[in-house]
Image (tube, rainbow, N blue to C red; front, side, top):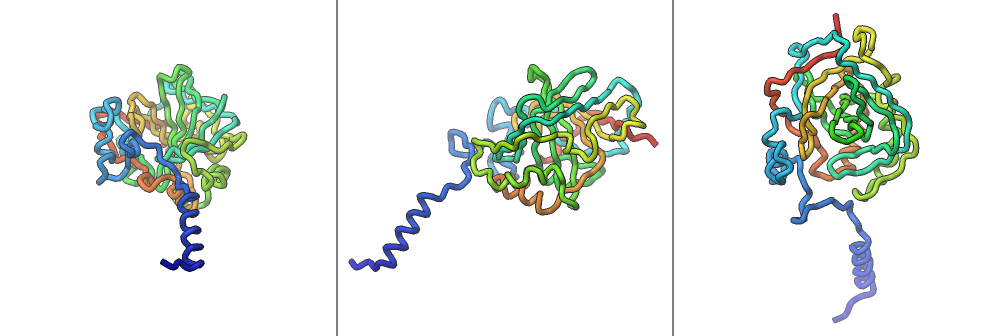
Length: 284
């Protein structure tokens, strides 16, 4: 059988391509599947999370799950000093990582903390959801950022959430977007050097809600859960009322960087089940 030089060369090039092509790996379980999925029609989709692993049972059985829909008219306006929120962030070395279901920035060492009712929660990481997971006054936003904090013994969690509409580019995202396209391995992160978490919010993110009318920061607070498995509860949530902006290109970059199943990585809304929501810093 005669094989032309052109055909042989083409075969060699094609074989070389197959050997060298290395798509982004996905962390899989023993069945070769990703641990969980965001697609509603997938057997590992949100409605099935609580059945996939015994330790994930709260995803189906929990009564204080997140995210939720927030209606300002139903929120209690709090004017007491007993619910202080002190945010004291500072620059620290950070790494950006593809967690397969979201892009995360992990701070190393001491990046500061928040204090709630005298309890200190250390800043650990932030990550993005697109579109937003929380819905406010019937509206879902284009992006949501979660700043995740834990106590020193890792037993308690507090999250500060920021909401974004499409608009001007977000300056904090701009600082990390150059690295997002380079995230080709979910097992490894890319060092960012020193990154200032105070830049997440426009202006200085360092305030105390002791006199809400003067605090200049308005947020909703409620008790909820992690929005991904294991859906652990007793998470103190703070959702900033002020909506910031991020460009369409920035959000698309985040969506393209994660895997297809997480391009829309917002967990469906969860029942409120009688929980109270408080609004701080908004008194008219």
